[in-house]
Structure formats: C-alpha cells, structure tokens
Image (cartoon, rainbow, N blue to C red):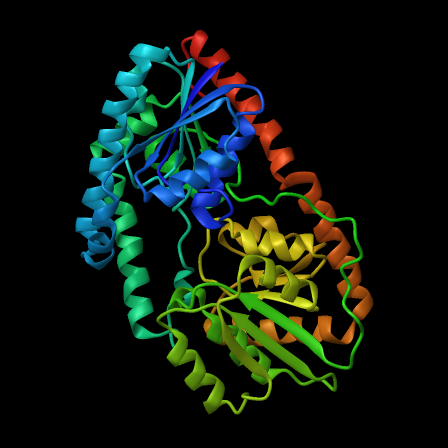
Length: 412
C-alpha cells in the first residue's frame, strides 16, 4: 500500500516521541511504501534522516523550526496555538500530496496526544489516529504535601483543562471521523470512550529494539543498587523515592542513583541533604542512552515514582535488562509492569506511598532470588509484547483492519 504518516516528531537514534515516530515509520516500511510529513529541522538532522531511511520512505519537512526557541518561551496556550496551526498546515500539504500519490491510508502517529485535533479524515481514505495518550492524570490523593504546591496547583489545573478539551468541537470531530483510534494506555482509552463514545485499540507507543539473551546480572557485592532516570520535573516525584529510601530499615547497604536533569534538581538536592542521605543518594546528571543502559544493567532494582506517564520507555529498558521495577499502579507504568515482574504501589496518600515504596525496597533488597525471578519475568514480558518487531506486526495488522473496516463503511 501507499501509506502517508504524519509524524511531527520523528528522528533516528533518539528516544521519547521522536524515537516513537521513527520506529513507527520503520515498521510500516517493512511492507508498504511510506511518505512522511514531519516538522522542519536543520539540514544536519535532515541528512541524518536521509542516511537512515530505507529507499521506500520519503520525507517532507513542514514548519518553521526557527520559531521553536520562541515557542519554548511562550505561555502554554500560545505554544498550543502553534501546534494547532501545524496540524492544519499538515492536512493542507497532505491534501496536495494525495492528489499526486493517491494514498491508501493515512496514519497520525505524533503528536501523541488526544488534546490536538486532526483534519486528515477529510482526505476520504482510512484514517488511523494514534496511539494517542494524555488521558492519564496524577492521582488526586497524592496532590498533598510533600508534593510541592506548584505541582499540586499545576496538576489540578491540568485535570480541569482535560475536561474542557472534551468540548473542543475539532477534537470531537476528529474522534468521530477516525476510522480507527489507538490509545497508549487504559486511562486514555477510557477518556476517549467516555467523551466521544468511541472504542479504541490499545497499542503502547513505546518499544525497544530487542531483548538481549546475554546474562545481564552485575557482579555481586554487599551493596544493593537502586536506579531511576527521567527529567527532574516535580511530577516525576523522585522525592518520594528518596524519602522511601530514608525510611528503609535493612542491614543491606542501599544506594540510589537518579540520572536526569531539570528544574527540580535544587529541590531534590536539598531533600537529600536534609535527610542526611548524601552518602546514599547521588544525582549525577544526564547520561547518554547507551551509558544509561549500562548503568541499569549494573543495578539491582529500578524505581519509578512518577505521578503520571503514558508509557515510559525507560521502564521497558529496565525490564529488558532483567531488573525488577517498583512503580505506582497508575498510568502507563501500571500496565507495563505486572505483579510477576515488579511491585506496584496502589496510591492512597503521599505518606502511604512512601511507606509502601520503602517496604518494597526492603523486600527486594533482602531477597536476591525474588529479584532474579522478577527480572526474568520482565525480560520475557518485554520480548513477547514490547519489542519493535513484535509491535511492527501489530501495526501492520491494524493497517489491514482499518482498510477492511473503511471498505465496509464502518468505524472501529
């Protein structure tokens, strides 16, 4: 088939949303001829794309990358306006391309959020929207001290805005007219159904290249190493993990290393000092992906305390490395991790989460065999469900399903 992919974020050798866009393109290109509309960018990044892309993939760059520094400094509503404009501009450009190439199917991959409308259904061909996310919300019960006031206010405002977006007529029109909607987690799936009466197919946006069969266990030592990673944003709630470590009562020495950078660094450093954990907790900054994977492989437990996340790739990387995961039982992590490959904390209050995180850390720290069993279960789960080759087969099945449904004049 001739498939048109709209992927605002799309770049090889990266993670997060650009990596998701790129991997969807590569998987679709295994069987189909792919045309991609993506964001404008500097020539050196274009050259990187051209070198990495197979011959049956063509790229069209659209937008105004020189505006990006301004957008990052704009109030959120003005930045959002830019993305609205880009979506409509992409549709107008796609309409011109369709007259020439006569595409069989169009797929909006990134932006991966339900809060932006789409106009591609107007092309009159099967239109797949997603995997979209953004329906996940921080548990209301956790929006209390010691979570910072600014985070509590911001997350409460976001919760309110989520309700307003449901009344956006352009978003409603997108949901109504999509041939097929894929959602990245159950929270977004439930939101789409409640708001627009549309069922969706679940497809986690994140994936990894492959699960190594090598023995990734690190050399034994008396110290149990915990690791975490992410942007130092208050909603990531790394302080919950730090406070949990402070509560741990175990004869086994513990060390927590958190890789990342961001606006919450000074607050985290202050918490570490105030709790007297400077010898047990380190914040070394960003680590390149390959280095981070090495650090994960050389750890014992992966801790992920984020209040909300769609489908964090770093959790999959930790599972693929054979590490048990401790996380909240909500959002994407609550689905990626099962009771066989980690310990999920059901949130009721910040204090309860800290206590339960501490209990989970103690349990895993004292039981190397449990860590090994959970690690193996995690690697197996990732290999069966979350490698890009496995996800690629699912994507191609979804394309066929969308074509058949459209021919019958229906929607899924």
